[in-house]
Length: 252
Picture 1 (cartoon, helix red, strand yellow):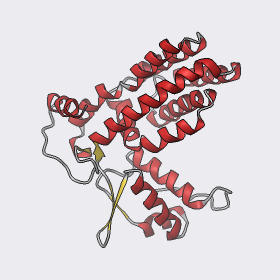
Picture 2 (cartoon, one colour; picture 1 turned 45 degrees about the vertical axis):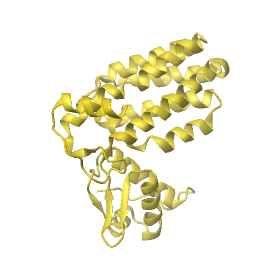
Picture 3 (cartoon, helix red, strand yellow; picture 1 turned 30 degrees about the vertical axis):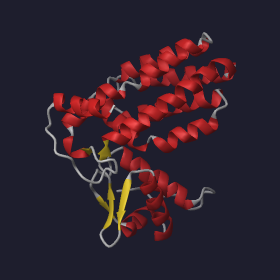
Picture 4 (tube, one colour; picture 1 turned 120 degrees about the vertical axis):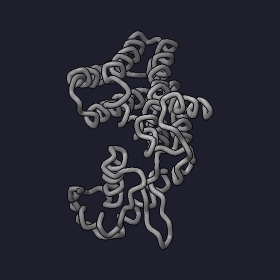
């Protein structure tokens, strides 16, 4: 059940509806394969159907929803190919961004990164993946802003929708939070040292972590994944971890 949104906010309603629905899909409140009704969503959020329809179209463009005329709208399964494609793009962009951050970030920007890292360590032993992912997102965004690469971050945000669902699953089920925070620590230390080579290596290592967790998650949750690029049709599979590894390796 979704909470009603504040229609009096200055932000366009369709954009707020999109953000709420995207978060619900990423955090598995809406499961892959689940049918979504424009009217039911509108009723839950306390809005008309028009902004929900606009949000559905944007979610479809982001690869999270498939709209089938006369049949309905469905949350897509997690496409392994799209996850790997998004990871590739994200590494290419963010390693370049972190190199630039080593040159341009201010003392205030470094202080913000330190605060975000401390907040992550404060919840390292709490099973609250949503809160950690919010802090993780803020950390990466702060690096981009510190590097004066706001547009680059928007590109990353637009390409990583499928990747975000895997990241949400990986925190409680495949990747220890402390490992991710330690990787953030290494990135920050390289930025503080103004060492672009070290920073690029640390960021690359961090963003390749998903290559380790993805096969394990495929094995644990085979019904959530598909090899089909559109995420619309399940592919034949076994649930073994070795099978998952071979599938990811084949797509690299």
